[in-house]
Image (tube, rainbow, N blue to C red):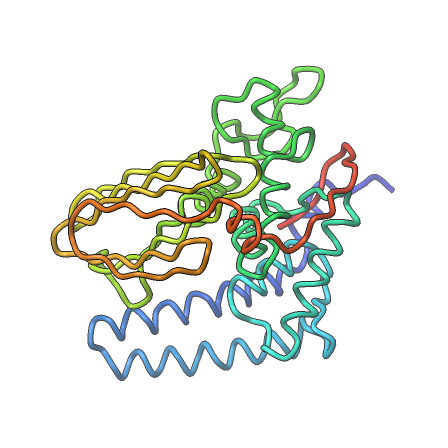
Length: 294
């Protein structure tokens, strides 16, 4: 019997849909709370919690493994907060094992690639996140550049070795990795509970042999600028806080300091970057081939 070309599209995506339903209702609860609609916020919170419980019952084993057992499923579960705290470490370890089993290559797709590196960094595997970011070959982001890409492709092999194009050659989904550069490499993110960047955090994560990074952002309060550089075994960071905002800087040595509006700078030993953010040092040999994922 011929292979059904629509089998992938028609497969049961209950794990994916339920996970996104949880994130959506949880987000609606937060929005309602910010707008002062307390009853709606509580209603959406209850719905979100019931969806979370249903997801755990249907798609998570008591050991903390997802029934899909794919990189994408673990990334989604960890990013959305679907995993109970007692089994979270087992879930993280299984994700990392799957990455190692794939030759230290990503196996995520359209919906989860943008979440992969933040999930790894948030769970102590910043080195592995940078290893994936800077990989070449297929699948990888730099592999696209090596094949002449000027935009991010929908498919990891958007242009194959024969020069034949596949799917969209200008797609947002895998380009969502830029979030990792903004929020982790540069280290800029809006503070929890802030809605208009009146409060933001700066917490750079140097790694991957990268020795400098900079970013400018026009927030609702005004221009925010962050730039850091490693030179002479020292990390220097310069940043601008606009009027109407305040910033909280956390350096790789653990120093944490609030800052008012203005232009500021700070230093710390560069070696502390490697000490604080290092967790997993193993890098296995890669292999070619497509990595399915959602």
